[in-house]
Image (cartoon, helix red, strand yellow):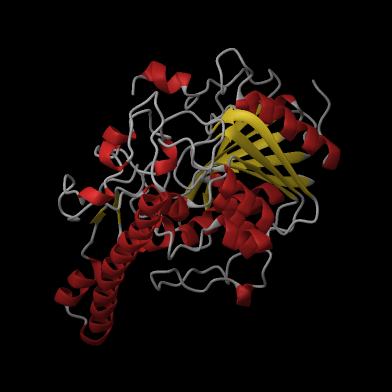
Length: 415
């Protein structure tokens, strides 16, 4: 996919100018478990409300909503997790400690209102955090899906005063469960194919753009079941690796032998081929919306699926179970949503290629907030316009967010 195509698809939007009076500072924080994370605070004179943006894997320092929020009179906190731009070992329970470090920081800065803004994967990250923060320490998740202590009970997890979800997807694991290719016949061979499960075989209903594919109901039923089975098989491999590592750690505690220590720390890296194969991205009749043909990665999933780019391509067993397994991950939006009780704005983008209408309905329906606003606005997942010449989804989302904030929190007057 060329740069021009990516820009046209709205994946990369240029941020507007920040107010001249805006002041930006960089801060290094220490999470409860000792990990170092960094964040950027941008503020304007008189700001008493701060909007926090995070994503488990990406740097949102230059998110196009930052100047919009600053212009409206809110401060903006954008923060990394410890896994930014390198999610090989992304464990969501540890990422919550990173979120907590940022929340403690902005509370200590004296802001009267703290609002989280989760775009895309930031949505399930913040839903998970808000769910855990609302619980008493003893009720928080004690161990990761891989069996390691989370440290959440011992950490300070300030609760936010509000939450905005912009085009959140159902969670990294749920997202991958929908787009992992179940036709991989051999996990060691990226070209191996089970023909009757191949989503890119015209005989099974596939068609290249601009024509929509058309899959039969029985094929889709077999396909979805096979996706579940593939994830379950990878889960089993991950758990086997982790069991061996745990046995080696126990042996080392008994023996103190270097050989046991080496066995305990030797990395096991899972390579997960072909993870851009959600039938909904090429068959626009499935859960129809205003989305264009193609996936988040481009217009040719039939080719992208076989390339290096893709969700969860390389991962540790612990990270697979915590983040990428739709069967094991705790960072599932629908699972977490009942615990999100703060005033909530949920913005659905009508051309979303990561959260489809049925996903959105489940997520909105699960939220526990009594003060819940749901809006559907025209736009693509990353905030681009559905059609050329229209306002971008980012522009429309910005207006909705500013209006919602202004009704509930004091915003600084324009400079």
